[in-house]
Image 1: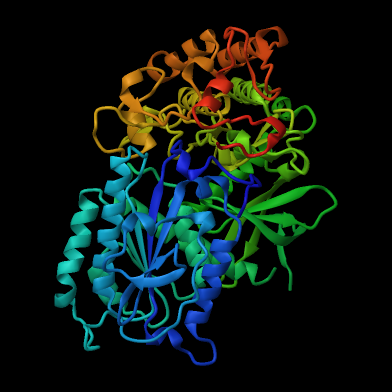
Image 2 (image 1 turned 90 degrees about the vertical axis):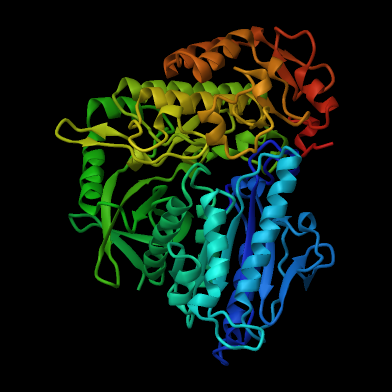
Length: 257
Length: 351
């Protein structure tokens, strides 16, 4: 939703706070379901609509986004090449794009759900970017990591991971949040294993079955801007839960519009 | 079936499209001959208290103090006209209110905080704002706040997203349902606070409720942003080499260029601190590090600073308006360091 200003103070000017966001998107085979209305199509449409739509000057001037996808591989969107590239070897500083300038690629569903590797890679990228901007004396806030999935994490052979196998990465997330290094939020949609997402993010796993991807993106990005970085990660999670509930109720009303 | 909300007496308003969303509510256009919008709050923390709050505000509209506040044209406050509700398909009652559509007379305020980007022509801000517009908006906001403080209201969540401004710098306010007020029988507390606009005493658990002094802090931040082309008074990377956490963290630790020059590191392209008239610099220093000036004091000093004889226009760029206290043009100084907040012709001018 735009507030009419053509451009805010440019992100690169360094006058305003910078908010890095890593969006971790599930592109495994289950996203190709149901066959008549594949979720991946809805996700692609939502990404295009959200990123190519209008945003408030405040969001535009603050938020930079890195897109990461996970299926059998973990890949990141390289804005220079305009394609997904393997996460290993990618330069974190080159992967974050100002919100208003990101043109998301068309995602294809297929393969396994290497979620734990994706979370590890996301944490690494976020930490590297945060450190780099701090070194450049940019007013950067702790990064947000938002994970969207419709499934459950699997190992390299496609076997489902259990809570024990998730524990190490879950602990890494918890430690990072505890020292204010990031805020991690997991969003499950139809078919997602909420119990396992709760292992990964005990207070930050949300099952948003009735909210479309477009509304989920809006809730996440809007909430990124409504809380001070002084707030505990927990407060952020509660806020997102509340915003999602508001949007769900409003969206159901809006069907009557 | 269209989405129709009704008043308690059964009067319907048909909503047409969603035009915005805030932290707690959604705003919709209303199908009506008058310029009206409706705000619905789907899930307030305490629905009964929210209903009483709305009823209180609607009643207050007829009280002399509110009538004084709403006098003048265009009305500068989007006061709730009538409470409405709708039944959610799930059965729950959702409350809200109908108010004047500020878009009829105003443009969103945040655009005044990026003057370089606001070109002329199609813009509602005319040929593009100058520092004169910034001073006018700062004064208008201070007068508005002084007026509502005098009538016993506290805004509580004063921030650019709740504000509106027209091309001449006249400022309006929305989101009245988050204000703090009393109707004599009940005190309706303000709960909302926003990053970057929260006074230091309002942080932490057991934080103070908003009051005129916390409003005065947010006012000083907004006035600084207006006069400094959007720059927040607490902007900057900590000067002691520690990591930046947030503007709020800078506020809590007193990292502010005007009160402690070495406390922050800022990019060279920010507007120079010496563009402020001396008396306003003194007010800012008091607001961020001493006895906070009330809104009425800001209004008086900004009125004085905006007097035509106190302003000079740069010989090289007519959009470069500055105080007569400086024999040089501070905006040209800024342009020489890589960014012109008021480029000639109104085109975006980052160099």
